[in-house]
Image (cartoon, rainbow, N blue to C red; front, top):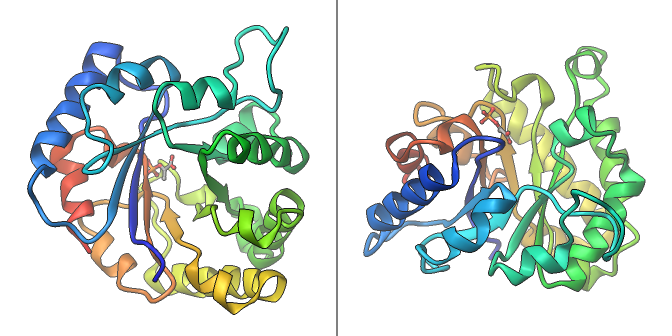
Length: 251
Ligand code: PEP
């Protein structure tokens, strides 16, 4: 069966010291508890190695928020997939709408990042989702289909099976607006069907598809109760243990 997953995306928040405290607090809060999902925290690059030392990698798992589309070399300021993996991180968010919108990340660039992440044994948490105008024009299915097709559908079935998808309607990220559970279920089912057409029902049924966009303690249970919503990618509510924990416990 596919996994339930709750992943936090810290974005550009927390100093190193604050981040280490948050990770420790989360590890302590969850240790010994039975939860029905994998819990991942995705932190800024500079936090990774130190945070890896204060979590056990099972109760709380570690990921980065990005990696470079190049292997190594003269790319000042970039951090490669191999460097991310060398910190002990096991996951990497790729294709977040903020990266697409503010840093010009195209599906072609993301395809390279996914390839390098997989070569370095990192599990991509690959984000897709439409902007408000596209939703209002009824184009959301078309948009997510082209995002997965252009960035991911060159992968072998085996490699695609390693990907976690995150559907994040851009109009819901950090806005306090959430997709309704029915909207989320409808498009998650469409995404799974799109995967099934390309890779077959078995691969599609094993693919975890997370919802992201102003998910919180108040709406997580209803969102996660949908058959095609396998968890959440959480921004704002991942920055405090008492906001994040109830989402983890919503399963
Ligand atoms: C995100 O950044 O992936 C996200 C879903 O943010 P928020 O939960 O704050 O909307």
